[in-house]
Every structure is written in structure tokens, then in C-alpha cells.
Image (cartoon, rainbow over all chains, first blue to last red; front, side, top):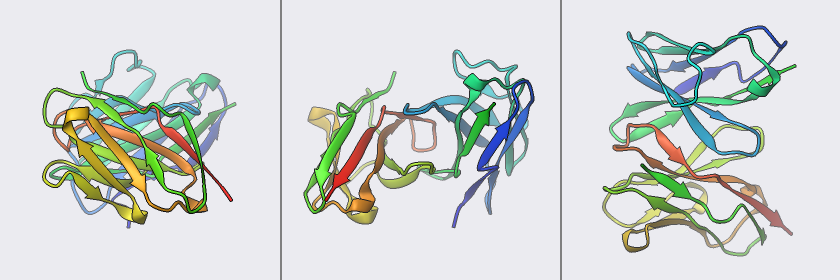
Length: 114
Length: 114
């Protein structure tokens, strides 16, 4: 079964609104989680590293004020896309190290902004 | 910085034929290498990974990959392709250890014809 659960799997929101995506570790604690984005027919690009109890580390070019990451507990990291626009429509996926040299990905979330 | 190159954007093979998807990486130290598959509208599934040891790695669904340090390659192979193998395949390298973010190649889309 899945060890990293992501919700929602698909979401449609109106332009200008905010949407939250959750990434949960099941049966293990994740002090670190990674958030990626995949534009249509593109590869996956790391957006940020989510750190439990501290600020997320964003990759160059990723707007931290637009993509808010909160890692409030050892089993939950959330990505909030604020004031979403159609160009934010993408596939967002999280991952977490489960144990040494093992990373599991969530199921991913398809965001469509209309 | 690490990088991954998948030279083939799209490959078409006949069902039952053999398959080889190419992947070249750039990394100064011992690489942690992965192959993932993504079916349309789906998340990522890990096919196999290499950290050390035997350079021929067996994965799920009949896939295997061979690590060749001299060629900086980690090509994915399957002796007989099934129609259900049609998907997008991503090669990835971990930044340092197996618990760090992955750098993905641009992907190779596999089409299978009868």
C-alpha cells in the first residue's frame, strides 16, 4: 500500500483563489518532504524541500510567497498555491524518505486553474 | 551539479519486441540512480534503483537496467514489451544520498504498436 498519501488527486479552482494540497506520510515520520511540479509534457522539477518545524527551502525561481509550504507535523506537509492563475495548472507531487536510500512518492495532484 | 539526459523523446516499439531506453547522467561521486514510470494521468511508480553492488539491476514488470560507470549510463531494458508498458519513463539521479531530492531527465514516451 501507499506509504505517502497525497490529497486531493485532482482539483479545479477558479483563478485568483487558493488551493491546498496535502502530503501525508503513513506509518512513519517524515522530517523532510520534497515537492515537485510537472508541467504538461515536461519533466518533474523540484520546487522546495519541506522541513518539519522550520521554513521550507525553495529552489531558485520558485516564488515562496505564491507556493506556501507548511510542515506542521512529522506526518503532514501542505503546499498552498495562493492566488492561482491558469499558468499554475500543473501536476504537483510530493515525496518523502522512508528509510535509508528509499524515497516514496505520493500519488500526485492535478491542479487545473480556470 | 547533477544532470540527467534521456536522448530519446519518443520511442515506438512493436508488442513483443525488445526495448532499451537510454539514460546518461552527470555526477561526480557515486550516483544513486532510479527509473520511474508514469502512465497517462497517473503518478510515479518506481521500476528499479541502483546504489551499489551488482551493476545489473532487476526491477518490477520484467524491467532491468545496467549501470555503466565508464559510459555514465543507466539504460533501461525489457526483453519483450507488452502493450500495457506504453507510458512515460523517467530516469533520475539523487543529489547526494538516496534520501535527497531527485533530478529527473526529461522523460521518454514509449508507444507500443500491435
